[in-house]
Image 1 (cartoon, rainbow, N blue to C red):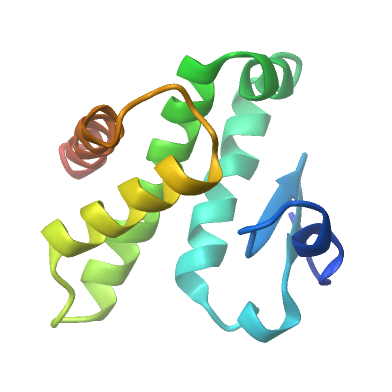
Image 2: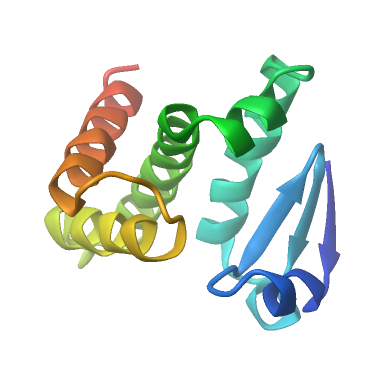
Length: 128
């Protein structure tokens, strides 16, 4: 895994703080110290490694898989934030990231459906 500091992708895709292509994470230079974002992107690296031939096809062409991949990554980000900030509120983080998914990922799901999927992903992660 390699991390590259760049603003290139944030200019192309609005709302992106970072993007992962294969095993390379591209992140805005001002966010390189945000370990929660790195943890999120590391999930996408792991997803790619688990499914190297199908990950991008599923991510780009399947709304169901894209939601699942993003919820797994955001659940990991939430877990990181909760474990490193004793004032972090689980419900607020789930609401915030569900709203981010609904706003930036252009998926055909309601906010309630996205939130429910994110809660499921967080529970799967928490249960091991």
